[in-house]
Image (cartoon, rainbow, N blue to C red; front, side, top):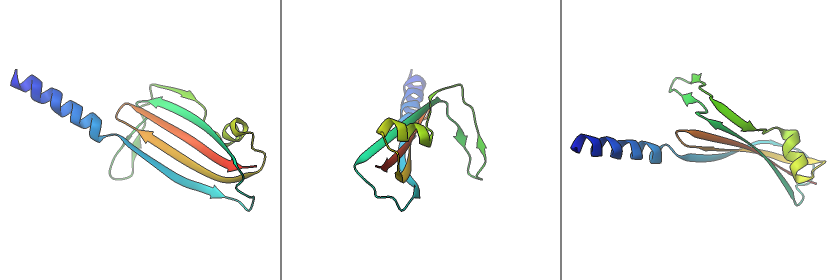
Length: 104
């Protein structure tokens, strides 16, 4: 019984520790930032496993959505893009990658 409780506790800790979120700027133009913001999100189940030497093994079972720049601009009604960012929300099972654009 102690092994089952310990195993469950370890699994819960792995799930909680493995959650992370990061936003990275990708591009900026000379266009004014403006007040419009558009987002496009792609979700992946088992989005990939990253190893320390920089190698990535992709184990994608299912994904939905489109995170393209044009989709994000269209979702925000933006015709002149000023900045582009990418936000990655990751947990051990699901990875969400969102492209964020600002502009006019």
